[in-house]
Length: 120
Image (cartoon, rainbow, N blue to C red; front, side, top):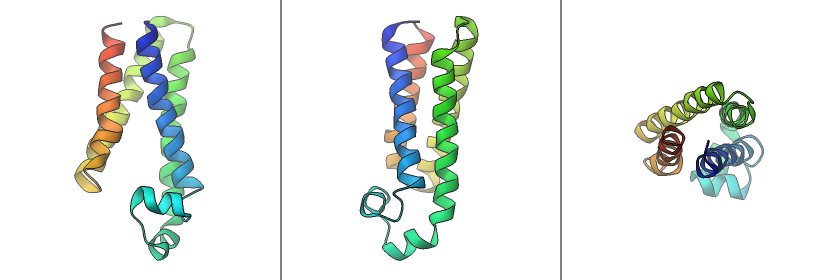
């Protein structure tokens, strides 16, 4: 696999680790509220839901990291493509149901990484 493809997959994984931190640990603080446009009251009311959502983002990151570290290139490719597809679909759903900016933050980077992996 090319270095460019690996770096792009790693960046998508890092993005999802950052989202995990925002949703699980910073949701009710100023940074989480600003990132998601929340009022303090709403952030407090939805804290458990956000933590659950953050955990799922962590699973996406873990899958991508697994794909980067797997020793069998054919299987590593499949793992990366599966988890990048999950990220892209989650981003499409988020853009349709929550905020259009999710398309640019989540889906487009995943699709770019998918293309890099495909053509590596």
